[in-house]
Length: 230
Image: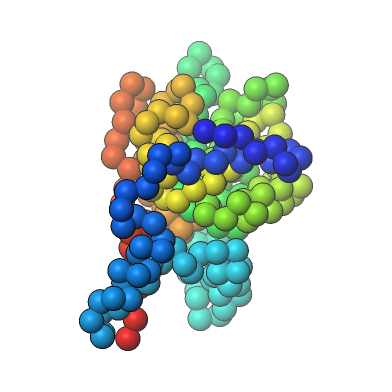
């Protein structure tokens, strides 16, 4: 694990594996393999769509297109129900204090809906402390997007609410890298309190983890998934 400190107030952890990739696992190998398939069955790995430009286009389409009603509907739900949601997902209380917890978002995107959850969760913390009791890790493929979105979150009104209550950091890597990072216990010494996976908050599954135990993380798109060419 390496720490990136090139951007003030934004901490990025490079979680790409350091080991030599297995044959056929590289993006180049996946592209070549997919294009060598018979006509009508050729594929390209989905990861090609999620560079910095692709992420911007996706954000524009999902947040601005009237036909894509899900974003507005989910945002409305989170605005009205965020307090109830975070009460269900919070790690819990012990002797009147909030137990340390971790939130991991495997595919953070623009953090527009996530910020509603984080703001509501911060309001459950009685007062700021030098070491925030909750940590939020946003995972994404593009380092610059992580830097941009986390910096924007920190400078926003919600960011002010998070100070001393929720620490934020980025995980730079793929979904698979994130799963490996968590299951190997490299995230932090404590058990993961709550995991959030999926495409931002949309399509989210919350995973509660009991002290001393873990539950399987849900399966979503990975670097091995592909789109078919016709």
